[in-house]
Image 1 (cartoon, helix red, strand yellow):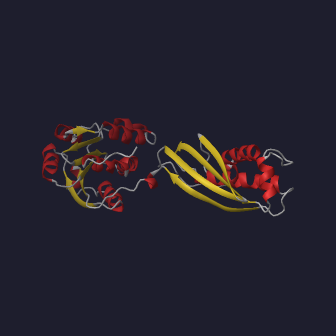
Image 2 (cartoon, helix red, strand yellow):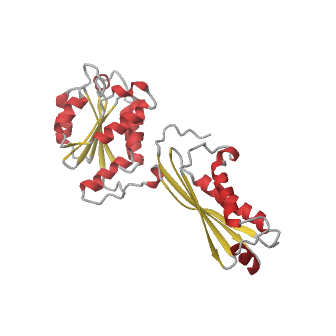
Image 3 (cartoon, one colour):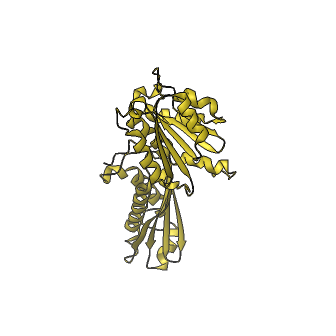
Length: 299
């Protein structure tokens, strides 16, 4: 199975469709009049569809078991065609599009089985996903014109005694999102950190390193007094995400906030900690730039 441990729980919604085509007008009349020998078509197929949604991971080897928190099935009749629409919702790490399509398929197959004694020409067509939302793929921020400045805070890296890994990892992730980037390495000195903040004209400044509780971990202390607006929710999400994967993440003093029109983050210096913080809040944290420009938030 695909590894989804790096993902966060979000609301995931998917709607799928299947079409059952009958060959006789009498078949539609008998469905409407509840005159099919095997029972009420809509009630029976709805029950089968709900079971199909819940049984998806039992039958498709690579599908993850997940909590189904809503499944709704609707029918519409147009001439000789019955359109089946099924919507599935969950709050989880992976989407429910396969569950929705599997449910629609089971509804259609059950309907076929119930109708074939009275209509030998019945057939199934157009099983497809209509739409899905949730997860990072549903949020594509407009990063055109946005710039980022990545700053490595490390005495050893600045002296050339150690190679930087975290800063370059962050750079690659930001570049993949379409941001233009700048890069610096500085020692763990408050004056150096303050100088970067006061001089950088980048939209986003990310400091990596110095967020722990050691005697030279001064990054948060240097940044916090310069912020206009702390973003406690971003800080909480980075720590929550990390804590689920590493019990010592609770000791991180990661920082997030706004200064003027800039977003400033301070995240751990370890490559694993840095990667997890970026994974936790990007790309959604970039929505802050729409808010700063006075754009409405889409809830």
